[in-house]
Image (cartoon, rainbow, N blue to C red; front, side):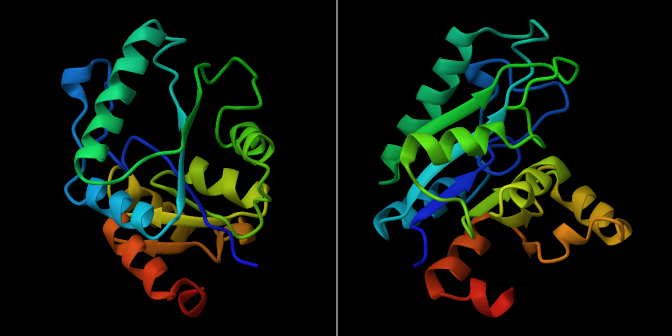
Length: 192
């Protein structure tokens, strides 16, 4: 039985990314076509969940209130396009905090599985970074790379990463809209 769940990274997949972090509501802007893609998935009865590292909190660049305001802007913009996100899971920790919820560790995805009571086998996890793909692979989900955000750089890393055979079945799309089109056409199995 196929899952109706799709897990998305946020920065670089849904919205434009920044090496300086998305620290305010004003800095959040959607990648062209991403909100429409999520709306298409919503209308097709897919459950959309976001799993995102937000180490800017641990770094003192913004706080939980600001993060919530950014997410409110994102969900409102998505509603305007006729879509919705069921839940947003985030890791507020820094890279040296040793938590199990910071991707590539699988904690966020385990939280999603437990709270939504959904097995993660073959669930598409769409990201733009190597850690997104590694996280998906660790829980038996389906790693999907988009070339937006850091995706082009990640794609070149994948080509060089002969040692990580778990990622050799990663699907690659130009953007979230391309992934959505393939998923809705039933082409993911043909591609993978």
